[in-house]
Length: 270
Image 1 (cartoon, rainbow, N blue to C red):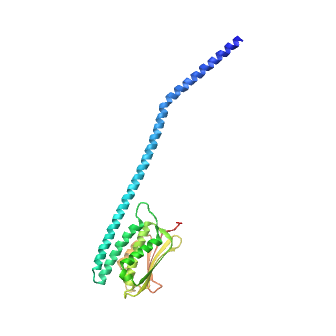
Image 2 (cartoon, rainbow, N blue to C red):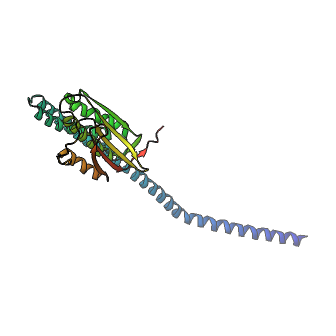
Image 3 (tube, rainbow, N blue to C red):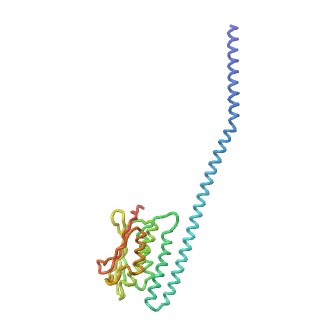
C-alpha cells in the first residue's frame, strides 16, 4: 500500500511539473506574441483611419467642386440675363421694325441660354430634364421676347412624357428658340392671327422627333430654305444631336421644320 501511494505521488508530481512547464511555455509564447499582436492591431486601426480620412477628404472635395460649379453657372446665368436686359433696353429705343426684330432675336437668345442654365442645372450630377415642363418654359420665354409679334398668334405645345440628357435638352431649347423666332418674324407678315405647334413625339422605339409647324405663308419656293442663319444653326444643332433636319410645307398651308434624333427615355417617376 505504501508503495502504491508513493507511485501515485510521484505520478501526480510529474504531471504537475509537466503542466507547469506547459503553462510556462504558453505564457512565454503569449508574452512574445504581444508586440506582434499590438503591431497588427495598431496597423489595422491606422489603415482604417487613413481610409476614413481619405473618404472624408473625397467627399469634401466633391462638395467643394459642386459648390464652385454652381457658383460659376450662377454667374454665367446672371451675366447672360444682364446682356438680355441691355439688349431689351436698346430694342425699346428703336423706331424701325427691322431693328426691333433683330434685337429681339438677340435678346431672346441670351434669355433662352440663361434660362437653360437655370433649368438644366448644368453641374456634375448630370440630372435628366423633364421634357414637357422644359419645352413650355422655353416657349414662354420666346413669347416674352417677341411680345408684339406673338399677341395674335396661338402657340400649342405637345410633348411626350420623356426625360432628356441635359446636353440634348440644351440643343432642343436652342432649336425651339430659333424656329419659333423665325415663325414669329416671317410666317405672319401682315400681322394677322395664326397658330404655331411645337411637338416632341416618339419616332420608332428609340428615337424622338421635334417639330415646329405654323399655318402662315409657308416657305418661298424661289429661295433656298437653308439660307437663313437661323435654319443653318438648327441644322448644326440637329447634327450635334446625332439627327437630321427636315424642312417641308405644313399640312396647315404653312411651314414645318422637323428634327429627328435618337435619345430620351420614358419618365419613370411616380
